[in-house]
Length: 325
Ligand code: SF4
Ligand code: SF4
Image 1 (cartoon, protein in one colour):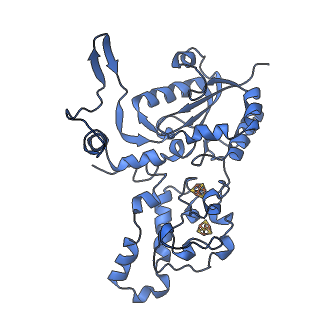
Image 2 (cartoon, protein in one colour):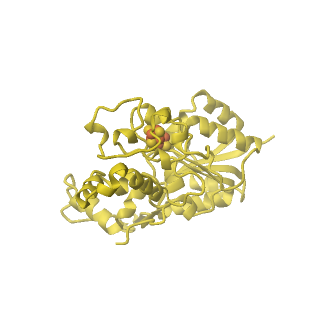
Image 3 (cartoon, helix red, strand yellow):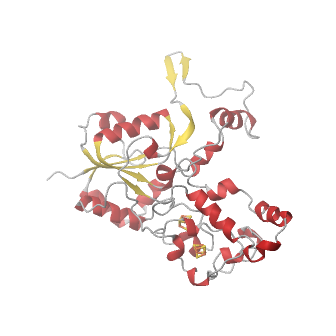
């Protein structure tokens, strides 16, 4: 019997999601044995024309990581959508926009200005920026269009399932692949991770006070962090209360607070707004009636990078989506 065809593709991403597939270790061999990989640019030499030659729906499942930043990425994911029975948004960038999505605080012109003209390491006396077409002796060179706005995968094509995380952990990947191969999938649109908040599985949850109050916000490097105690109770922002579990609490176990890469739990439209309102509700709460304007300002100023803290992985998927330029 023919094996199911599987494709892996990456768009605007760092490559970490590709690494995590390799982190399946010997389980990768089992997966590779059970499926017929028809596209995996980071590891195997297939071309776009190989995908174009496949019949519509011939690929059983495409795992697509990375956000959509370039015209070429949009073309490829539309091609994969047409050729695939299932499409899985693989990792935070495809799921929510991820770290590349923070570029939505700027636009193409401001990014090009900084990257190609102003950055201290740049030597570009003619002020050249990438051009869509460039005439050369042998013809014309082209580049894909660089869009103003980074999009999530499901803002570009219909997505069947989401594997969250930066990157998704190997156990969730293996569960998803196994479920797909056995045809035991949840309803379409599901996030393939537990639908409860990280605080529910956090090894520090018993130290999280019933009533939290932060009187001063600290950054992780400013204090000696107690490795047993809830970060919020130490004045360190942790977005675990606004984040889906399933990651294995990797950061917490490495004594770093959660930054939200698994996205929100079901039913939450805007993870950043949820995290922001959670933090706002516990700032100086015990002395609320005695708080002065200066106290409020001092507390808010303690959050070094509010947008990057609350929307680190989810700006393109948020209600804001991007900064209006
Ligand atoms: S706020 Fe962070 S450290 Fe505290 S219980 Fe939740 S996930 Fe754990
Ligand atoms: S603790 Fe938070 S940021 Fe770290 S891997 Fe888990 S969900 Fe992602």
